[in-house]
Amino acid sequence: QVQLVESGGDLVQAGGSLRLSCVAHGSTSTYDNMGWYRQAPGKQRELVASMPTGGSYGTTYYSDFVKGRFTISRDNAKNTLYLQMDNLKPEDAAVYYCAIWDDVRGFQWGRGTQVTVSI
Image 1: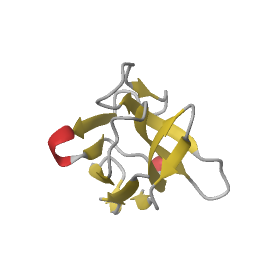
Image 2 (image 1 turned 45 degrees about the vertical axis):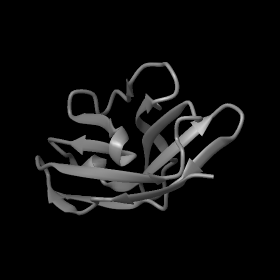
Image 3 (image 1 turned 90 degrees about the vertical axis):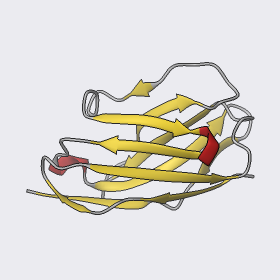
Image 4 (image 1 turned 60 degrees about the vertical axis):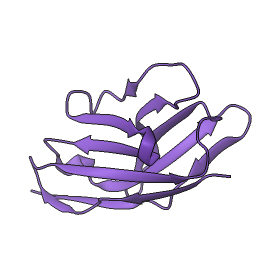
């Protein structure tokens, strides 16, 4: 079992930047992927970006609506996943969730961090 703790959500003006962090307590190398999802009120949770864990092979993925604006990265020494969000838009406002998953065990989720973008 891995515990994921997100931080970094805040209120920001449109065009601004935020960096979200997700600290993983426990070993992540046995999972396939780590990433960020988001869920806005009344909408389904959607994948924002993902990358393979240190113990697997794969590619970094970005959804079309964040390509060129968001960057996912990982600091293995700190067991921390980041999401750098630049040029934020009002439609980026949501609760952002950190997740880790594989085909066998499914998903482990953090509790989420709120991002609010003002016009």
